[in-house]
Image 1 (cartoon, rainbow, N blue to C red):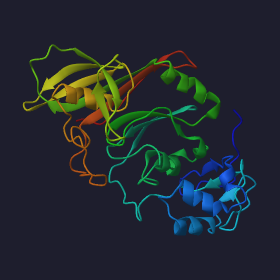
Image 2: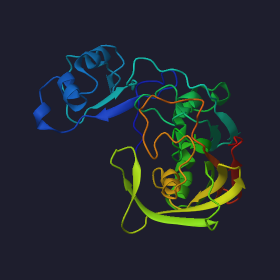
Image 3: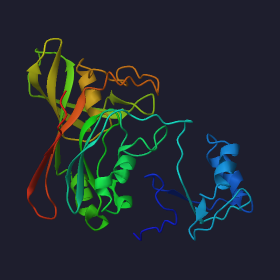
Image 4: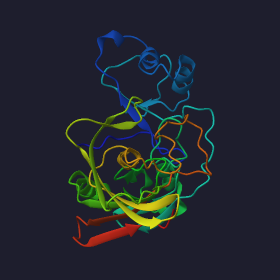
Length: 307
């Protein structure tokens, strides 16, 4: 696929987004502002008018668009994402760079820090922070891209690519499930279970779109649970996911009657924005291992964080 040329630069570590205007006849000949208000009503007409007149919304040729610009189907519009709140407080935890080479950046992500911009988070994300790190400025920081997911609430080791020429080889590892990830978690102690315990079930979207729940049917999720250390009321567990469903570890542990300590989603979701930095989710992506697709050698990276 041909790389799309972006006429806007990074702005404080934030890469511009783009939108291809659809071929929908109902908008032909109307102002672009009208389309944006209909398609993204949660932003509001005044905010779209301000953004269009800021000079930071442009076409693929770099020419600025404004509130009087007409909707043109197929036209590409570039713009900077904004957060869904007036201010964005700093998340008081720091990421740690574990490794850099000509292809990869390996990072220890702290709890509470989202990986990519979305919703309430823009500058306070792992991706934006890394693009501003002084020790990474010898790279083309626009090319830094996560190779896999890690929930905002989860801490631990994460791989990112900064080399577009080799990114596909590393992405294929995850698609082919040839990456081994190990997590650690704190949860209620159960000594009555036969460890290591394999949990196999079917996971589907929950009643709230941002949650996951178990359901009847063919299993699509598999986790191995091991007891590492009995600490009394709560114990330290090793969790090995064999599949990669959303919130798989959290839901499987809850299903065993062992919800993870300080989980703000399970069993009952807390209100968004009510994070208590004194109570991080006790889930840590402790280790990631794989055979390097370029060199063939075994590589293992471990988080320096502990629960």
